[in-house]
Image (cartoon, rainbow, N blue to C red; front, side, top):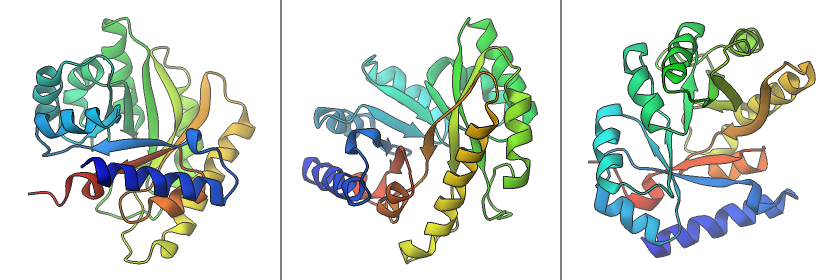
Length: 227
């Protein structure tokens, strides 16, 4: 595993330098759905500190077992309102907020814990029926609505573009998200930061970095195929 992670970090660094970016501006989110706690600990041993989980119940058990407050846990899966209280309790950053209703429930649960919950707004760039996310056209209005919720802090945007075997085919989707981020920044909406772009996975993270990704979500290249 150490060799695989080192190779990924080198590829991330090379991609950042190729477009004039500081490699330190891009963070690795190791995606650990279906990955055992022992394998997560092995990744921690190589210096990985940010982990992404898709399923609440699996994640809660794993986070409790690992019990390491040096780590940052990100929720990257589709989220239902009735799981909000758990996700707020366990996760530092939620990547998948795509409706005002969900944002309001997360805000309500965060208020109970006296917590400011960091979130990203998930954008369905290609408007794929099988994927969650707000449309590009509705993103700015959703961000404006969320900006009034006192216990949420919007840090940026996330997307899951269509899958292509050729990473170059994904580039326009990443470019679109980066342009949308810049557009929101120009709006200067109070309480809204656009520091993070969560985009890019095992097959296309280098292209995502070239287009401005700050968080790349990589699972298969670290832990192998899912069972």
